[in-house]
Image 1 (cartoon, rainbow, N blue to C red):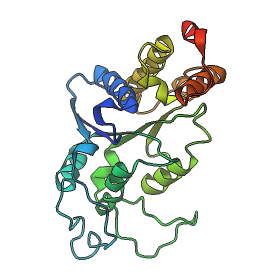
Image 2 (image 1 turned 180 degrees about the vertical axis):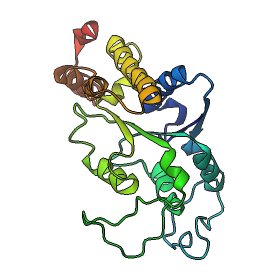
Image 3 (image 1 turned 90 degrees about the vertical axis):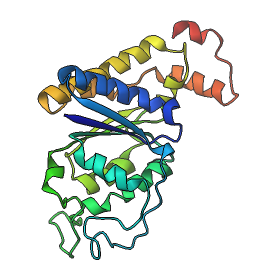
Length: 247
């Protein structure tokens, strides 16, 4: 069992979202103790933007013509049984460095030949290599908003089109910036990370998350008023004084 974590945060090791990814992998590997785990920090790689040349569909089927670090990453993605994509939400989407990785995964897709699906969408989620269907894809993302639901529709729609709806697991954490503050809301953060770890264990054991765990993960780390106080302080607004004592 090979688990590949792609850390798509520009912050690298300092990523808040990476804390969640590590908790998830800890839970997954607890059920599969022999699992081999590798974490790759995308900000350390030289990955150029997709050229949109479609050579990977025509002249060199299944292979990108660009010679950079993506060549090695293709091999690691193909060899992984579990692929964890970890990144913060940037401007309602994928951080630009990691978006290049996503775009460059086009060689994994079958050539589009003009077919129209019954739902009106092109069948871009059909994969060139049948073995890719056996992988577990886990999307882990944090945002700096009090609620995750209104922030992620665009991102989830993109993954639905690429992977096919229901073919991946999404863990979307609101108030993710809290994980960058040491000594702040530690009890609540530990509780959330414990739920993420449980999600990893459930996916390893059952192949899916329970409704109870999904409900926990979709909840807030702090109350809206508590998160607002911290955000105001962060941007130089109102002081929140004794609020820390209640975290």
